[in-house]
Amino acid sequence: MVLDRYVNIGSFGHPLASDGPSRNEVLPSDDAPWDQGEMVTSEPIFVSSATSVKAGPFARTCQAAHLVGRVVVHKNDRSLDSPFRFSEAVQLHRTIIALASLLPSEFETAPERLSTAMALCYSAMLALYDPYSCTESNEGEHTVEETEMQGIAISGLQATADEVLRFAQHLKRTMTYDLAAISPLIADSLYGAASTYAWLASERGTPEMVASYNNLVEALRLLDMRWKVAGEYIRMLETSDYANHQQTTQASYGV
Image (cartoon, rainbow, N blue to C red):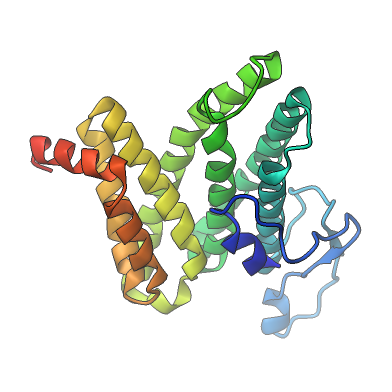
């Protein structure tokens, strides 16, 4: 299920190969006590459980992948009337934020174990915000719901890119000594944030945006030493229109 959701993040119109879990389906328990030989009570965690319930890294990854799937289904569903579509997008935004806000504190203690869940949350955010940030692509009718979601999307793109940048800078320390511990599933979030910075650099032309873009490309280059998919993302960045403009801006600043 996790891989099915991941490979559909950047596509449009392709149905998921597997159904989503039911609300009463149980998520994997925290396997750390098991690995350490400890006998502890095991509280069942359901898909519908509040995100504040303590969970292990794999359960967090499953929760994040489930939200990625909901974003993919939402973007593919053209049967929703405009107000309901924007209202659903706002609700998805709030749900993803609720999970993503819990992960940084857990990530600090075990970055290599929580990085996949965090990256999937960031990928879900960027995939949700991108089509709603532009009046031409969101296909709305200028309703109150559309205006609300567009505001969320515009501010959310840069805020999420900033979060991914901090995430990548923290993770690069782990990648320098234990690259094999890092999942290739983080690559899409690095690519999405780099694309956002390339777009922002083309719009604003600030050296800070150029430097942020370069930092994320550097993280992808490190990841490429173990997972070649990162190199494919770099090539996609290098051939994009925004990246070509960004390279011109970069040259003008001597970055």
